[in-house]
Length: 412
Image 1 (tube, rainbow, N blue to C red):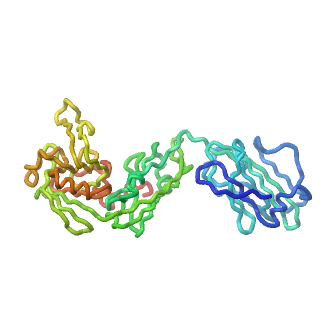
Image 2: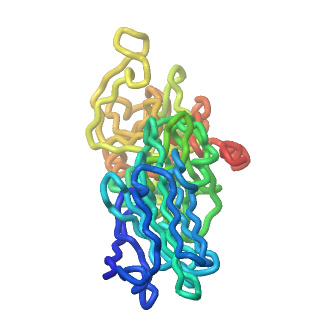
Image 3: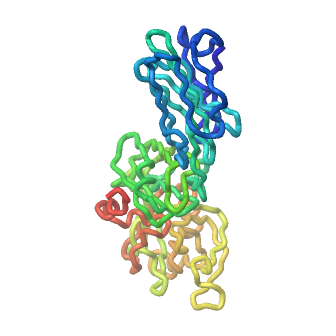
């Protein structure tokens, strides 16, 4: 009797073998009258065994080759029959005694595993075939997968669960952060994808050996759905590191919210889907701590937050150190820049820059901004007197021209 099929998720070890159906299956499972010559021993400890009925024309081949070792677990095991058809193929994890699922081609000449293998495992392959006269042949082999020094996980930023209800803003880059450094960046990047609906041109940029960002040429269109995938299970990252698992997630882009903070006018204009809906007085960074110019993207928000300059290297006892409790805060860079309420600078808001680099608002405006803007929304800063926001400063992605961004791909 044929075993049932069961589908398993990518990267797990076991499944139920996929075998033939119908009349050929009876030949595969019958215990007598097959004419297969039985030889002493088995193939459990290595080597290749081939047993054929005298005069059988069918020949069987197994890839990877007999006794293959250090095979990527993402490499499929393929069995082929020439001058005949396959009647039964079984691939078994020898340590777990678990069979692996597979699929037979329509002409019954090719069988292929349909799930990845496991790391550091040996698989016994047993294949049977028959020619057009009914004479049979059997082939057995072992395949051993590699044991990685480390397995790298594809962590996503922002965490999909954190924006499942709210969606992301039009400026949100998609970030894969790997748990180990990537040496073979091109090999890994080939397995990454972002599919946007509606379609929008985009590309990858390697910020460093662990972080690769994806952004569109222009801000995302409101209402876009993003399907993000990393098919990196078994991919060689280099230096003994291999991809630990595949991952696919979905993001949704909400309405466009863009704030434009101008250091000359000391005003911040708020645009919703391109329409001006609010204007508020602001105070940017003072001359010694100017706010970076360029597009910033909101990455974090908290109603109450303690700001400490030591978070970016200016600690207690050093010139410029500060520590203060702030309210209605939204982070726009990792260099200590936030949009937040500051009651101490209300008199300066609208006429002078006095902050440590943040965009200061009064309580009413800060509350409105906090309740309106979320992760991925954009704050564009101009005329602040500060340097350009670095591309590596969390989401400095939009500081680069599209041509510059494309040069950050490992595939160029």
